[in-house]
Amino acid sequence: LLEKSEPAALASEIGGCRDMAAKESILGYLKSCRPENLNSELCLKMLQVLKQLKLYEDALKFGVAASKTWKRENLMFETAEIAALGHLEKKIWENCAREILDEKDTVSKESIAFFYITMAAIMSEPERVKAIIDAMDCKFEDRSVLRKLCDVLIRSSMHEEILKVTEARNEPIFTYARSVALAESGRKDEAGELWKTILSGLKSETECYELAEFMDDARDDRAEKIWERILEIDPDGKLTVYDVNACLKLAPYHEKRGEFDKAADLYEKSLSGSKDIGAFIVMTNSAGKAISNDEVVKCLKDKVEELRKKQGDSRK
Image (cartoon, rainbow, N blue to C red; front, top):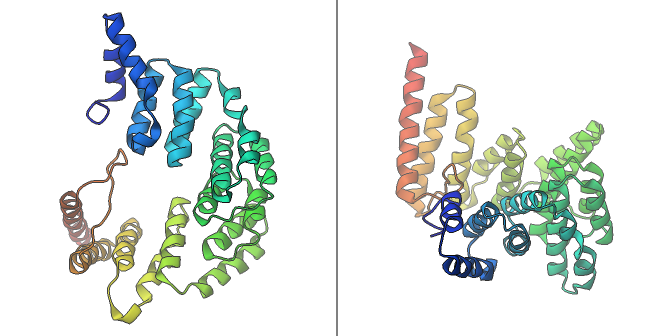
């Protein structure tokens, strides 16, 4: 039902059930579901159903568990909204300090801290963000957690905190985060020097891909230079999945500048390249759900046709 139904419609059906015994049975089942037994998309739908039914306390409990399990911001945003609707904000923080201090496993501790930092940022509580980072001694060793943390801090304009958590890390993506923090703090010369360091130090396609993707998420148009760098790196002369994705990512930059033929060429190169190396191009629909490879191919072919037409029209 969760997969096939809209949450509002499903909640309406449950809420309108006149057989009270059946209704209580259904609600009992909903409350018994655990996030680890669902994927992140179904967790989000479950949260929305519980919210529509105004089961705020159950929804908050489920949302906190789902957010910690899947570490997805859309789940955290939904959980924060539920806390506000149910006036349950204090319940989010009642176990925060104990959970962080009692956890002995470093990776788990960092994951828990990231959850609470993200929730504090979503709920516009910068002092809580600072307090949790200080409680962690500004150290986040897990690369994945630190990457997501930098993203949250950049969007929250918490520049000093970015400098603190990335101070000991020299990987390009964290050097970039520092350069953003310095630039936004008015230290543009220092930021410029760091940017030069990044450009001169990029050697692998993996580093370039991670950095360019992060910069795209931050809406930094300089990501174009990094996607281009991937195409310049030529391991043994072989086409790689990084090249395929770089072509896909570069095309919109050219389209934006009205270079429609160049954009079309890149989309075609991405299509032919994915076929040559047997790789799938991952694309999502407006709801954020991955679409099938056949749909991707059709979508890109349609896009190429549209761009060729635009180029032809521009020459008239």
